[in-house]
Image 1 (cartoon, rainbow, N blue to C red):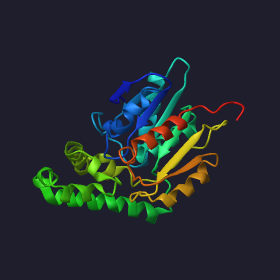
Image 2 (cartoon, rainbow, N blue to C red; image 1 turned 30 degrees about the vertical axis):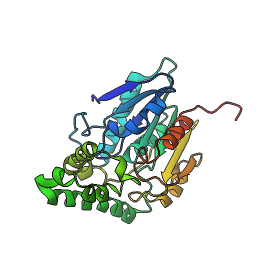
Image 3 (cartoon, helix red, strand yellow; image 1 turned 180 degrees about the vertical axis):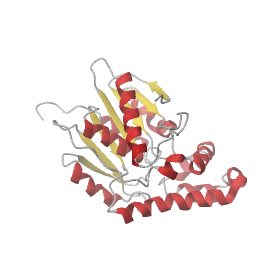
Length: 266
């Protein structure tokens, strides 16, 4: 499977994976803060951005995403064989799957999917996406024009961003179209988010969660330790579900720290 990706910068390789209905440009707010220190690979998941879709749904679709990322990682790894990964939301879950399988050197997850407090909790999160999709569909062809008004655009973006004013009109319209047409939202994220068994030795894991996340609540972070008891948990004040534009400097520092291999004497 061929995934569309960009490479920028120099240093240890860090692959960045976006969330559902998003695309690789989601990482633009932090990109310049990372490329002086990392060889950054931003990738579009299947059926997102410019990557081809796949005709697989449910849990098999999530597994196919993990396998596609693992294949990409094998193809772009550095001469030292080390590749770090970080992801947001669905991308965070996929990053943690890669860490559990031992496919990466470190993993950092920003508000990862998959750590709900049971099926009802997952259903509530998906209902928020469904409500937003229904509202956008109700606007029909008028949606792009309606989004020119901040009175429409900002409330529509508020579930995802603590500071929706920082998202440009053009970016918001692209995300709106993806919300309406994305196949993973319709047939993937309602599946059980299973995690592979941990390899031995375990891969270092960092999980950071925004305190203003209205899609996947901040309290879900506690469930991470059930599968990754060694994970470093960070509460990130004042940022939402997609935190990169809310506080680029802080998020970049978390990504850099998370993609640093711990010293042997620690």
